[in-house]
Every structure is written in C-alpha cells, then in structure tokens.
Amino acid sequence: MSIEMLSGKVTVVTGGASGMGAATVWAFVKAGAIVTLVDRDEAGACLVAEETGSSVIVGDVSDPDFCNGTVDSVVATHGCIDVLVNAAGVIHRADARDTVDEDWRRVMSVNVDGVFFMSRAAVRHMVPRGSGSVVNFGSIWGGVGAVGVLAYSASKGAVHQITRSMALDHADHGVRINAVAPGEVDTPMLASGHEVPPTAADLERLAEETIPVKRLAHPDEIARVALFLASDEASYMTGAIVPVDGGYSAS
Ligand SMILES: NC(=O)c1ccc[n+]([C@@H]2O[C@H](COP(=O)([O-])OP(=O)(O)OC[C@H]3O[C@@H](n4cnc5c(N)ncnc54)[C@H](O)[C@@H]3O)[C@@H](O)[C@H]2O)c1
Image 1 (cartoon, helix red, strand yellow):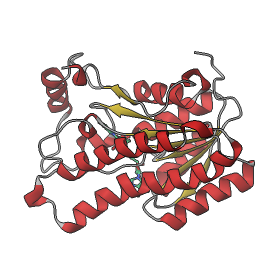
Image 2 (cartoon, rainbow, N blue to C red):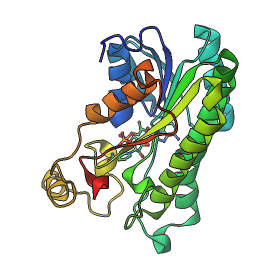
Image 3 (cartoon, rainbow, N blue to C red):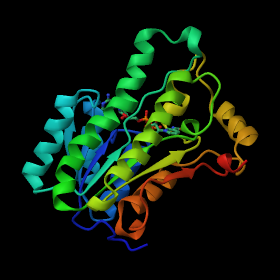
C-alpha cells in the first residue's frame, strides 16, 4: 500500500478521541489525509488532534443538527468531504431484563442514529460531486447473536444494513460505503460496562478461549483496514462488511 494513499483527502473521523477512532486518525494523517476529528470527549479529542495535527469538532453524533453542521463546516473550510469514518460508538452489556429504556435508546441513538445522521449529511455533499467514501464501524456481533449485549448487537446489525443499503443507493453515484467488523480489540470499550471490570489477565484468557489467533487485536490493525477501504485501493468495493477478527467469524 502506498504511504500517501489518502493524500489531500478531506476526511471526518467520528469517535477519534479514543481506541480505534484515534488509531484511524493517526493512520489517515500518516496517509496524507486532512482529518477533522469529531468526538464528544473534548479533552481526549484535543489531545489526539494536537498530536496528529488534525482539527477538532466537539459534539454528539446522536444530534442530527450537530451532524449536519459538522459536515457543512468541514465543506465550508475545505471545499468538500472525501471520506467519512463512523467510529463513534457505545456499549451496554446486559440482556433484555437489564436493558432499561434509557440504555436501549442511548445505544441506538449513538450507534445507529449517529451513523445515519453523519452519513446522510456526508452523501448529500458527495453525491453531487460524484465521489466519496464512507467507512462504518460494525462488529462481529452485528452479524451473529451474542450473549449479554442485546442492544449493542442489535445496533451493529443495523449498522451493517445501513452500510449495505446506502451502498446500493449510491453505487452509481461514485460513492462507496463499506464497513469493518472488528472482533475483540484492545481499546477502552473492551473493558468498559462490565459489573466487575476485567483484568488484563481476564482479557488474555478471553482471547485464548474465543479467538482463533488467540490474542486481542491492536487498534492499528483495524485502522489499516479502514484506511484501505476508504482509499482508491478499494475502488471496486462497496457494500462490503469486512471482518477483522482474528478468524472469529470463520467458524
Ligand atoms: N473494542 C472492540 O472490541 C470493538 C469491537 C467491535 C466493534 N467496535 C466498535 O468500534 C468503534 C470504536 O470502538 P472503540 O473500541 O475504539 O471504543 P472507544 O470507547 O475506545 O471509543 C469510542 C469513542 O466514541 C466516542 N463517542 C461515544 N459516543 C459519542 C457520541 N454520542 N458522539 C461523539 N462521540 C462519541 C467516545 O467519546 C470515544 O472517544 C465503535 O463503534 C465500537 O462499537 C469495538
């Protein structure tokens, strides 16, 4: 892969303050992209932006006005939006009995509404130009059922379907829409939301027992696939949900 595979591409990365979003910001900046990082965590976002030389817009992707305003302001500043990466997400670890209305709505509003609102705002600019690329963060749990993460799993299934349906709607508009479906990745989310927070040894055991390659993914390993999907190297890919899961979904 060429080092400057996104040279000059105007890119928005949501969830860029942490984990895989932050790794994506790093990977895209190194690939020559002009990155605006979007996150509700102001301190985290400013830190990553300062380290990578990207811009920041602080706010909540579950707010449609914020999403429209964010994309409009990037277009006003840079003249266009070439790439959108939807990495912002939240998890709630519970079955139906312990998922109260507020938990359900929070997960859906960030993971589903957020992806839809940002993507809608982006394609409104991309389609008239006849080019653009969107990369969504799905999950292995968007493709299969999972124990104890009902709302999250449902939300990621919706992300996969947003990806496929938008890809078809815009396939002949020059706009490609794909998703990565990560497995267990070593980010703050992995240890969050548990009744008893897992230790590093617990997470290692989880990897040993459930992942064919027997280790967690590093966030960079997912960011590199997002970079490929966003770039012209993936020019014939749209509507793809790409597992990056150490072999989990092969079984
Ligand atoms: N960690 C994993 O094992 C894993 C596996 C599969 C998929 N994913 C998905 O990958 C993506 C990145 O996850 P991560 O593990 O890096 O998580 P993370 O918790 O490290 O980072 C998520 C980021 O999203 C931001 N965010 C959350 N809600 C927001 C909102 N309403 N508006 C703006 N920003 C918001 C957070 O502030 C944070 O910076 C998520 O969509 C997640 O669901 C994670």
